[in-house]
Length: 281
Image (cartoon, rainbow, N blue to C red; front, side, top):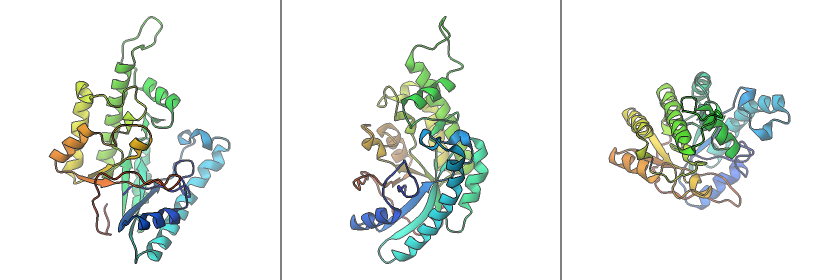
């Protein structure tokens, strides 16, 4: 239910979209969701590899999304005898101003569903590299006590505050969008100093996690089981075992993801929930 191609997510994935679909068919997939990233609209949201010509990079995003939809519709019809393709996109919540754009994109008649996801804290990427992760952490630590040099030296309370901010902003996204599928629920773990820590010891963080899970359950949302975490070196997928156990107890639906990599590495699937080819909004 979560997939990307190098054709429409350059720098993030590999391979042409049609090749990704062909490979899914060879693996025996009967249903697959296409979810390229949504276009961004602000220069401040560009990534380093897009900054050589920022205006041109930004201007290319909306036409690329339109080209993706056109190609997805072509492939949906072409491969209908072999696989049911659902057409969607990943709706990134960088700030509340993106709510209207995500709504507009979701209203396109070609769209079956979208994934609600968060890759940022206070508008700063948390999964790009360690430098950006540190910037995001710094943006969330204003309430922490500081030493004589004005710095917060202990990384643990800094990360705790960032985790709290991440789940608060995730909640803002959930309330505003009510996405049918929630992407990589605990992505905040990726570049943490201790991605395997038991976050239940952080009371404020765990309370926010439980609040967000309860809200997703209240409108019938799904959490994806995203194994890209394993490819990137973590011991557990998104969501981690602690959160997955809560979702199991709460009778959540958990979907699976497929991400194009080289050479056609298909991420491990822990749970797969086939769905009917109908609107999931």
